[in-house]
Length: 254
Image 1 (cartoon, one colour):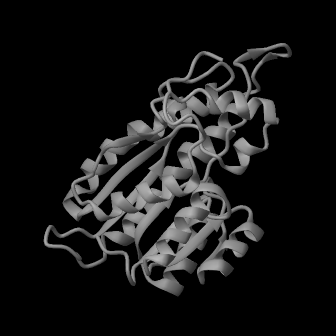
Image 2 (image 1 turned 135 degrees about the vertical axis):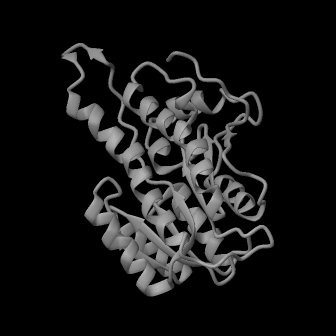
């Protein structure tokens, strides 16, 4: 699908992979709305690309509905939806202070899994009203973001792994459900990507982590995520899949 002139929504668009994907979409001619709880970050990126910055808590139904309604009012219904919003706090199931507080687990599930589903359901509802744009009657593309933690969760990643595993499981189901409407659903599964969250770690930790991928021995870059997202949008046969972007790394227990 050619994104030129199309409306696109990117959650987590104020930084990292979301921001870079917003830049790539805008460069290809899309009308981009960046949704983020960090409105200042979204505004900064939107200013660079001529996009729209909207404050949005993806885990909140009313917040997401309001943001997508504003994006629709400004750009029209989106044919492209990229879900990059997420959090990754680390905590053991049972730590030195006892069991993990249930609210800590729930918060990660709410943002990463419920938030992804929340945006997906709203974006898909809009996409179904649009006219097809390809010979195959494609109407839109939804790209979600999981993590290799969905498959190789490390100690301390219980909530994060469970949330991203849910995103992986949702992918094929949603692709099957939306197939009759010409909407594709694909999930990118990043490994160690040089986002602000990872780059905030101590330098010695970063250096150790960067040596773990078999090849290339470095962190992935946000633009490599964005390039994959753009290829998925362009390649109509990619559907219902979870694609790893990780340099062949397989995470160890800790």
